[in-house]
Image (cartoon, rainbow, N blue to C red; front, side, top):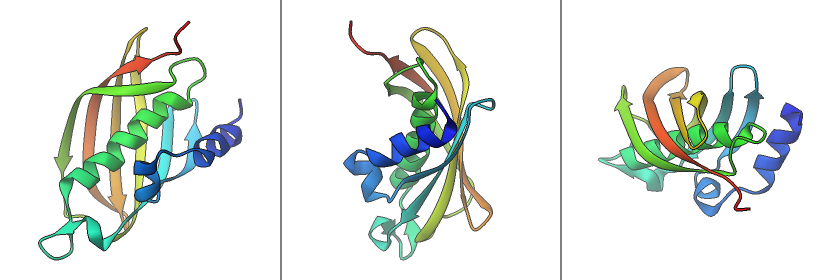
Length: 138
């Protein structure tokens, strides 16, 4: 399946949580096992004035990491996050954000993922996660 087909498939069927964050897949590099997505942090995602609440930042990175795994043919149909570690580098503000997620390693049932979130070229957060790779029931 081509990268363009993968992106079309993703962008045609987001779950409500990704739609709420205005998630959009923009690039998939199968050789690097990396997916790039854009999100829009709404003012409603903020606390303390104009600082995006960390749970929304985490949700964006968690989504891009999981979908990076789901982009790989025959790897999985979904990812259940077993563990996630997020490091916040700078405050996120309302507006566009760009996230990258990558499959670091994947076995039969467990995957190791990492990701980053940027805003206006500035690193906002990094993450690593361990996920259960969900496959179709046969």
